[in-house]
Length: 367
Ligand SMILES: *Cc1c(COP(=O)(O)O)cnc(C)c1O
Image 1 (cartoon, protein in one colour):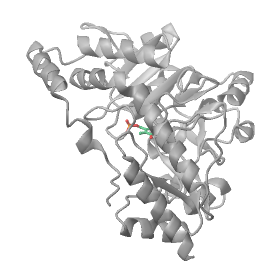
Image 2 (cartoon, rainbow, N blue to C red; image 1 turned 90 degrees about the vertical axis):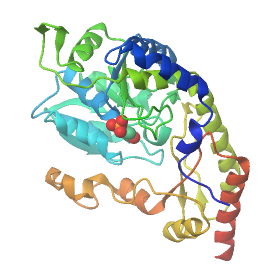
Image 3 (cartoon, rainbow, N blue to C red; image 1 turned 120 degrees about the vertical axis):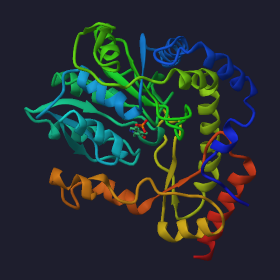
């Protein structure tokens, strides 16, 4: 049985109503900052629970523009997680700031206890990453940031509707950044991103920054960027957004099923599932002994398991200039040899999950 990783060919297979909406939209010519975008932003803000949502060109831009709007730039240091996706670091780098890494713990998020040691006089912001759909411990991080007067931009790209104590990812910081990339839990048909905030001034600044800094057609208030969420993608987003809660619920249910069965297998360790956290399983990642062999075994049996990620960012060629050396982030390093990701999405069937469980069981039984 094949257990595919990507569900995109299935996801829009029965979407005649969406095609009808696109067909009605195109002749309006309302392609940039159009009405469906405003509608999508309002619905997104309501979904997350913030006053404002601003559609931008990508999740990377959502982080970049948020930092920019907070006045972060050249020579500043921004603290983030060592084990994130490259986009977090790219966004910090793009505005001329320097990423400073903090190691993670077994929740795959920043170990908040190590943040204070990373703060220097140059530190100007913290970008916690709610990696894999987990939550960074914001209850602990927020007072640290406040004590040092540091704004927070949450990288919530993998954690839409992730929450701690019932409070959603994206609502803890000054701003929250989301991605609508095709592989994310709420997706459109190309790149896209959203910033959420409760701060009216930040909202104003972000709306300028995404649209060349133009106050109107003839007046430039600040120097900005071209980073609007395409209105045609907002039409797609409006079609999918009512499903966001059920997508999260299905992923949570799938993960619980995996946890129950895979957790019984000697050789597998399930990461901590803290009761104060809602984890939305953008990625279902667990720890496995003999990981490389298990991965090969699964792939040979048509299970598209993956590793997120096999080489830590700080050891990548493109980031050598930061001056880190192997061993600087021991938990991140350990994870690269222990973690394995199995498909967990809302389109996955029980038979496919059972095949994963059976295959992993067999692997360790053979010893
Ligand atoms: C996807 C992602 C981003 C960036 O999103 P894009 O929309 O691809 O630019 C940033 N951070 C994390 C952790 C992501 O997974």
